[in-house]
Image 1: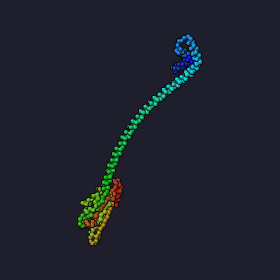
Image 2: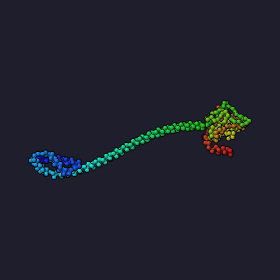
Image 3: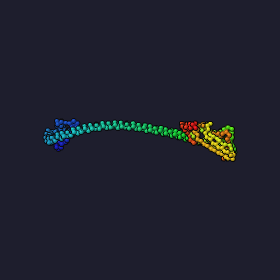
Image 4: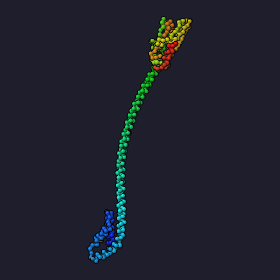
Length: 319
């Protein structure tokens, strides 16, 4: 029983010492006082005989364990000190981790803000791209419409130009029946009234005059027919100037005669070409056979700056 009391006393003292070491530590005197105090609490006042016996027994048992208790306390104190140092290190590490977490949280917040800004900028860029695509599409449609209109206008212009270039005519002398024209005492302009072809309406059957509607190179040709002893002579004129002649003469009344001639002329817009019958001459025509005719057509148009006209005109003047 005494041994058990001593063991319990030692255990309580050990627990108290450990607690005090955690809180701040005890020295050996304090431990001894604690043991004495505990011994007093465990052993209330008794008779002198019992106290003496208990003191003797307790001293014997406790003396046996005190050296081991002091060693254990020192070792426990060192362990507690080491643990406290570990706790301080862990606390510092935890504080550092918390600081890192705060920094990382701030960085994440900043990145989120940057992402929101980039998202807003990307949305704005996409909106700008859509606006530019719409503008470009509208401009392309407008250009296509302009090109389409221009193309149609050019086609119409080319058609008109081609229509202007479609120039050709051919006419016979007699509009009805048959007979002679001439002779006359003066030279006259022949009116070929039987119009066979008049593409472009540049030939006038009332006046017998062809008027050039555009600048170009033209081909003209006349053919004359007659019989008897009277000669047949006619000439092509341009703007009052003699160009070429078709002439035939015979010595016998029963003989028939015919002649023809042609010429290529460079005409300006408004130039006129016609046929004149010489004085004292006559030609014959029959509406059924068209013996005597006047024909012409456009070979090709010329540009306004073309020098061929000047060269041809100079050549005519020299000859």
